[in-house]
Image 1 (cartoon, chains in turn red, green):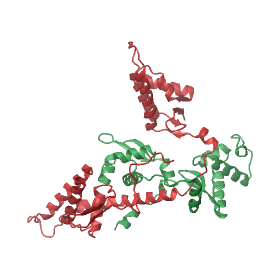
Image 2 (tube, chains in turn yellow, blue):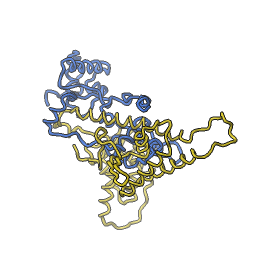
Image 3 (cartoon, rainbow over the protein chains, first blue to last red):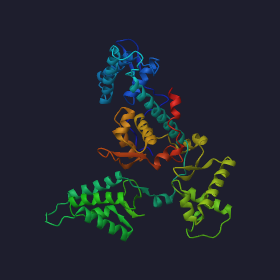
Image 4 (tube, rainbow over the protein chains, first blue to last red):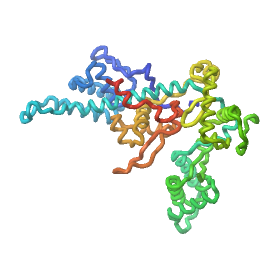
Length: 256
Length: 188
C-alpha cells in the first residue's frame, strides 16, 4: 500500500511553517515548507498582524527579502518564483514612495499599487483553504476501509490505462529493440496514415488488441514510433478504450 | 463465491427483497465502486428499480447501525467500514495511514479540481510558483488526467481530476466539493 512515498509530507495540523528569531544573530528557523512565495507572504502578513487590505509594504518587503536571503545562506535552493516575488514587492514599495502626480486631480482615485498583489493573495488563499479541505477529506477517507482482496479481484481488475502507461509500455519495447542487432535493408516506409488504417482494421476485426504484441510486430524504431503515434491518434479520435489488468502490465486496445 | 454468482442473462422477475439482496452481493464482490448502470445491465433490470433498491439497501445498513456502510463514491456504489470504527480496523490490519500528498501537490490539486480544465500557466498564475513536479506526482497517482489541448497560443495541455480523485477524497462527484466562494469568508 505504501510503495509510493513522497519526498516530503506535510501535516497541516502539526507542521506549520514558522520562522522564530531569538535574536538577530541567532536565528532559529523551523522550516516547514512554504508552498510558494504567496504562502510565505501570507505568513509574514499574519505574523505582523497586518490587515491584508492595508499591507505595510516596506516592513513586509524587508521581512520577505530577509527570509529569501536566509534560505540562500542555508543553501536551500530558492525557487526562481520566490525571487520574482521579491522583485515585485520592491517595485510596489518604490511606487508607494513616489509622490503623487500633481497633474492628477485631488479627488481622482489613483489605484493602490498594492491592489493587484492583494487580489492575488486573496485568490490564492481560497485555494490554500481548499487544499486544507482536501487534506481533511483524505484523512477522513483513510478511516474507511473496503473489504480485503478476494480471489476474483486479480482476474476482473481492469484499470483504464493512461498515456503514462502507454509510454511505459512503449519504452519497454524500445529498450528491447535496442538489443537486437539487425541488418539495414531498404524497405518501404509505412506512413502514419497507413499505420492508422492498419491499426483501426486490426482493432475492429479482432475487437481486442494487445499493444505489446502490436508494437512487437514493428521492424524498426521508425515504424515503432509511427505505431505509437497511431495508437495515440486512434485513442484520441475513435471509440476505443485502453485497459490494463495491472499497473505496468500489458495494455489492451478495445473497441467500445 | 458460488453463493454470490449471478447469471448475467437471468431476467426472471425478482421481488424487491431479492433485488436488494443480489445488489448487496454485487456491491460486495465488485473491487471498485459499481455503477447503477452496470448493476442494471448485469441484472437485466431497469435502472430506476436498481436505484430504488440501492437506496433501500443503504438505508437498511444505516437503520440497523451496521459496522458497514453502503455509500456512493466516484460515481458508483461501494461497501465499506464505518469511519468511527477505524481504530479497531487499523489495529487488526496493522496499517498506518498512508503517505500524504505534499502541500504543493494538494494546492495544485485544489486549483485543478476547481478550475478544470486548467493549464499549467493558469495554475502558476494562481499559486505563484511552478507546479511541474506536483503535476507529475498527481498524474502518477492518477488523481488527475489530461483533458486535451487548449485552443490558445501554444496549445497547452489541460488537466482535470479523475475518478480516482473522487475515490481518494471520498466524493460522490465534483458537485460535492464545497463552492470555492465559500472559502472567501474564511479568508477575510
